[in-house]
Length: 137
Image (cartoon, rainbow, N blue to C red; front, side, top):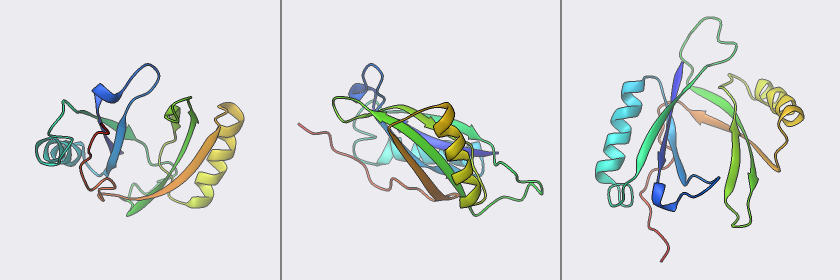
């Protein structure tokens, strides 16, 4: 099991849209929580506004030897609303190979149509959103 950390700015979220910042995927829930606390207490935007976080458990598919991977592949699909915000986001579990993630994306496209699709390779333990944020005025 891996743990995906997402921070959210609820004040910029609205019906059918959550203003989310994907931070990273971690080996332990504790490491994800420690990272969330650091971001919420230190990085501009995250510590200036009433941001929240959530941690989502992610299974590593086809990991028969239960070894902790260095990197994983994740499939995402989403639609875009009239404000050009991502909505209806759908995300897969974690895969060990790009080939397996591509096969999963093809199956997801058939069962859950979305206008946009992406496959990402993520390094476990690496923070992908490294800076804070500034709200547009």
